[in-house]
Length: 440
Image 1 (tube, rainbow, N blue to C red):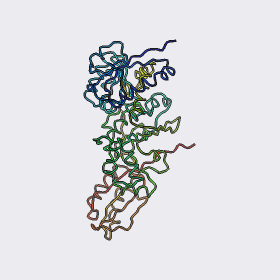
Image 2: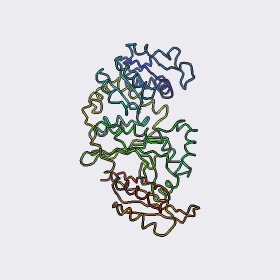
Image 3: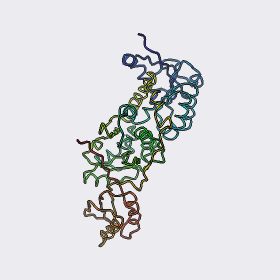
Image 4: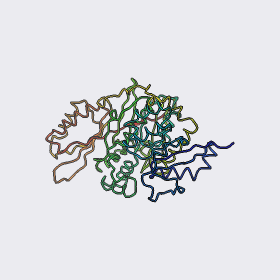
């Protein structure tokens, strides 16, 4: 039987676009053998048609004629790989209006404007496929939509940003300062020239908004997510945590409590050095998902990069061509708007353990004063470290860990601690996150 021919258009021939073309041409026989499909890259559009690319297209395939692509009725699927949230949104709307399915890797666009785009896709009787938007080549969206569909998802814990993970890994094991490792990451291509969205946590938050909506079957907006980045992490705290048996990671956390309330956070987190996520080093990503039937499942792999992301894009093309993606899209609560807005737990009500570092003046009575403040807000100390310390400023770092307490209590205590005359600077506070174990 002859394979089914699917014609594809591609807009944005950059790094990921080049990877997609490479896979479609070099792995064509394998794809056809596995799927019965012949994926034909029919048109590639980019404003730059002259620069050298990683993969050289056949003569005449690359053009700057977007209107020609949209008017080509033989093209069934268009890949939006231009990035950004302005032109890309208009482009996706035009693709859908032209009667074509959309494949995108654009996490920021979906996190910020997904609802408008999903509604437009449903109206056009088309779908938007977005496996490549979260965690590169890791098939986490497919897993949440189908593989784990029999479960109530109770929690997910993820390392979603390779840049941050590379930086924190080097700070942990090489003892390097944040600024030094960031420069190294940029030199190796693990960090952008402007790494702001990576290190301030927003890239991770975009992914959590998408994955959280799938995991908990509800609409999640970016404002629902508490976000804190790693740009102010000090090597002293990384070392102190390591001394106590903790590894520092930038985690995305989504949890549902017994009352159905959802908490969503992105923040630096100390986790046990024995946790599987603590072993995820360098630019890799991982997601640990807990379902009430399956227990703990963990997904690991390259979270970015040309070929990993391109692999996910081609997977979406195949799902659309086979008819799978559109059927799922038409019933997906975050797309159909049948899913309710998430019942978000206020940040103040989230309970956690905490690491607190105080730069205390080296004088009598300090411990009693900050202990009194913590006691006032029902914060119980679990452990403390104070090494001998010679400082020209006459200060000494005091590290304490707490028993579980509410965020609102910690916030109030930190505000009061900062006002004490025996504290030299603003206290550092980092959450200690307990990731559940899957035991019989």
